[in-house]
Length: 371
Ligand SMILES: Cc1cc2nc3c(=O)[nH]c(=O)nc-3n(C[C@H](O)[C@H](O)[C@H](O)COP(=O)(O)O)c2cc1C
View 1: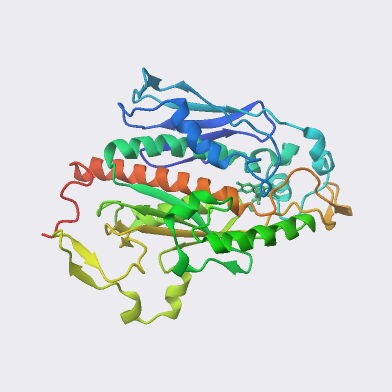
View 2: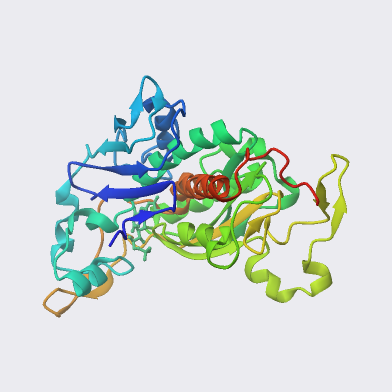
């Protein structure tokens, strides 16, 4: 079984645990000739890295990636690319209490129920340290996309933290990198800062909604029925730790619309390509990209490890209480943004390769033509 893998042609397998010596990703199926080096991948990992600001965990990890195989003289060779990140800040003592007790909201209890054995140090395989491997693989995917379809731009940002949502009339792409929350709305970012400060001091946590948009994606990616682009995107986002909901385009809100409001009307654009009056479809119709922005949204639950006493049970079945000390993010949604981007990159590249395999031709060229 390859349940630690995803992707059809661009196939990513992640390995490793939170407190093991290292973790990483083995990427098979990357096209040859993609210019890449460790620094290019490091750029994306640095965005996910803990301890970047006071709103994320103070666990100190260098998250330094090494490329062990599949790259020669600055280019991919078409052979498996092995990406490795060493774990450098493994303070096992922070996690001593969870050896026998199951932390509410964590996978401790289900790993135990399923396997009868678990690496309890920091959650082991269920720890979101695993997402560093995805971000490394996503960095490689971005370089391959740049080589195949240079117009594609993938950007994630936070649209909601708890009860506080961005105001879309203030949406500014340039703001996203300017605040610690990846918020496109500067004013809301300032409100979130105060809100999260209070929350952190009280030892609590909060959930978030992240939106990931891919611009410049050619029409035609994805396949009917079981190979839908939206199926793979939803699965990819849902596989991220703490994600409890995924939407494409209008998503759940489509249930509240009428047909005339929801179906995006089609016109001929000045460039001779179809254009649409709106994008309720989130850039995907029948599982195939329309050439519009691909819009995926996912909900991240509040951090379960909080400085509040919670009821739980021990491995032996005794009722007890637990308070999860250690270093935790008050809103894990912040660090989930680069992870969502990485998953979007892996899925899009995978579908570009699938499309090339089935239909041939150069992605982005003549795509979107009518007739
Ligand atoms: C980037 C990132 C960082 C996370 N950090 C923490 C954390 O510090 N504390 C915590 O309780 N959960 C954290 N989580 C969530 C847990 O890993 C997750 O809730 C847990 O493994 C149970 O899995 P599930 O929520 O997907 O069911 C994080 C999630 C992400 C995406």
